[in-house]
Amino acid sequence: MESPSGQKAWVVAVDMGYGHQRTAHNLRHLALSGQVINANNYPDLPEKDRQIWASSRKFYEAVSAFKRVPLIGNLAFSLFDAFQKVPPFYPQRDQSAASLSLKQIFLGFKAGWGEHLITRLKESPRPLVSSFFVPAFMAEFFGYPGEIFCVVCDTDIARTWASLEPEKSRIRYLAPTPRVVERLKLYGVRPENIFLTGYPLPPENLGGEDLTVLKQDLKHRLFNLDPQQKFLNKYQPLVEKYLGGLASQPNHPLTLMLAVGGAGAQKEIGGEILQSLGTEIRTGRIRLWLAAGTRPDVREYFETQVGRLGRGERGSVEILSAPTVNDYFLRFNQALRQTDILWTKPSELSFYTALGLPLVIAPTIGSHEEFNKRWLLKSDFGVEQKAPKLAREWLFDLIEQGHLAEKAFEGFVEGEKLGTFKIQKIIEKCCEN
Image (cartoon, rainbow, N blue to C red; front, top):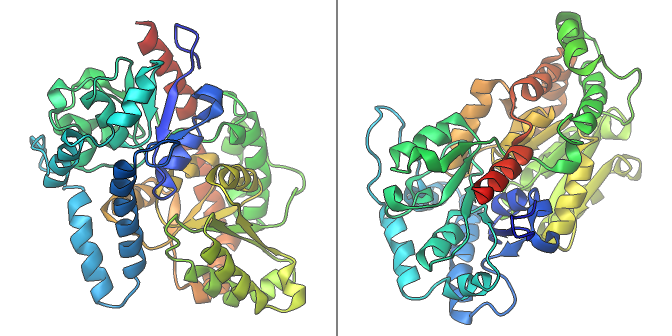
């Protein structure tokens, strides 16, 4: 995308977990030189700003990891989560009053936090597209002259996503769900600044607005997920309508991917899955991909667990990792094309169900993930995980009955797949006006 002056956008994220970075990565084709700027980790970032960002990141990762400690872990996390809690939607009411955490963010701006970044971006004004609310707030607070867009990456959001005085703000929101649209209105954001776009999925997994790549991948996925053709026997006319039928043969073995979050929490699920599916992995009934991200400790943990398998069992297990987030996302998106089942907590990856990927929902971490989980279950895009140690039983029951094939197709048909293209068109139109 280019602005009217022929310049691409500034695409901004934060290096705190994968959610905001993954969202920005999927929009990197809009960015100058294809580069995403991390507001908390860029060249010449002032040390005082770096310390503020670093303290926030370390605290979140520590609390996320501490949550696994029995009893006191859940208590500590619940106290932290209270600051980002999403309030009940009903009864509908004015929710525009600023939260304490939001007021603290703006106190940081008054002390100069973020001014260096915005001053740098002001030197060459372009549309600014942020996948996290704080850089968008910074841009408005320090008088950024270009258009400011904020991409939401959850199915529902806390009050902190809207500015201190939302009715006066010029930030334009790109919302993934109708609920986010309505929530922003309750928070006081002007309706003309809210656009329902859907979540921006990776372009390389779509194949353009005609979805050629996605449809081809889904044909093979449904073949693997419906070995008894129980799903196809019921929905063959719909499959023909949307896909033109299934593949005549698979182009990959039945594949399960476990994706661990940026803080490394829940990596133990991978160890339990390995124990449960050892025989199925050895016999080639299923292939397992363990997405470790960029954290060496997570990769080392998975390597240790895989090392406990017999030599013959390791061939169908692969650990996905990379030294940089950009390289990891590229590898992750490529692997998704031959993934049949995605097992992960209900993060921003909840929206990947629109790629025709059924989700096995791991336990939530945080209030926003609870809302993502409810959305997934209500939409019939996924199933809650049962005991990982018993995966060889319940997982294959779901496959044999065609239930996961049905959820994969439901996600494809009902999920918003064109968010990436809608976002680009809205930004272009706003800049033209």
